[in-house]
Length: 99
Image (cartoon, rainbow, N blue to C red; front, side):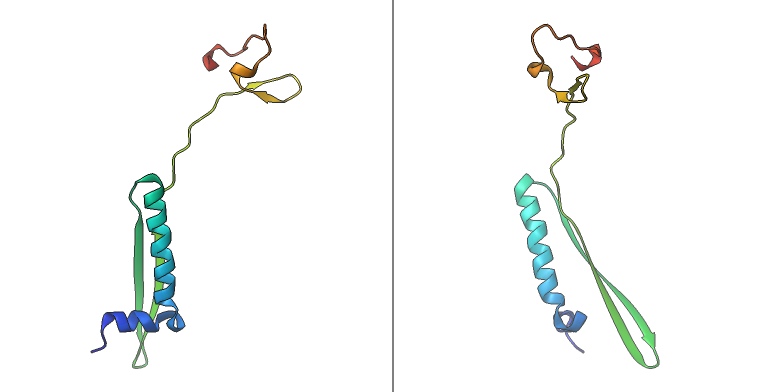
């Protein structure tokens, strides 16, 4: 019986190990960047046909990303955006929910 790591080494024309190495590194970098969990999944689709077995690999990753916060802006009459602290003196916010 062929060892699993040998089978992996032959998948995708011999490029599966290199692909897995790069994908795992990307997940690890993402986890280190924001100190969160990531995931690498290897799925092997196996199909038997005419006495042969065909294996199709699929690699998926979940790389953690930093969350972003909503930012409130005041729109000027010319369509520009300004932050509240950047408004000229005497300018009143029209939407009190932004304060």
